[in-house]
Length: 287
Ligand SMILES: [Zn+2]
Image (cartoon, rainbow, N blue to C red; front, side, top):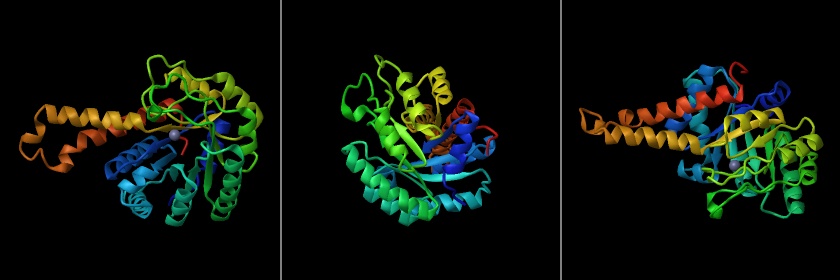
């Protein structure tokens, strides 16, 4: 059964480790991530962007697939299914579809509007026993063109949103989505430290986990990051393994064109990536 991310993140914050959120795109992604978490005896959060939800034909399909897998794969570790960077409307759809967690991304709106929408969602999530992630300070990414440094959130605004009663808080600390540019200046630990001092026990979320050096990840965890989002890295691992299979001509040998064979190396690569991240984040055996 899907669970709220609240308990797993409170434990992570108190225990100084982080739970990974791995975004899913289809059956292979979901199966690989769940298998990795179960093997590592780690809690896990499955992230679904609005685009990925549409791709999978809708949020109800996602809920049906994930719930089916939890049962058929006999998954016993805590699993949360979370909307990633949701609009207010998207959040409502996921609440109705049976997600156990949502992220409302009001970071592009004026802070007062972000506060108003987050307040409304805090109420609804509390009634439903769901967890809620809010965001302050937009997280940069390749869609913004050339990015040298991601945005840094205002710690006072972080406190304002944290005090509304959200479960977890994403704050920009120079992190960005997608691949990091060569001239990236690194994470702003001063910002992170200031945010943690003002928000206390609130589990903080680090987006754009792909390509942040391991030592920076560890330092971020020591400064209160309890959830790390990984998306691009699984995509790259999947694409590389699939390309290798095709370049080696394996799809032309025997029944190598069978999708269950063709997609197997990519799926195995996702699983290996997730296992590596769980080890790095320290959530192994924390189920
Ligand atoms: Zn993100």
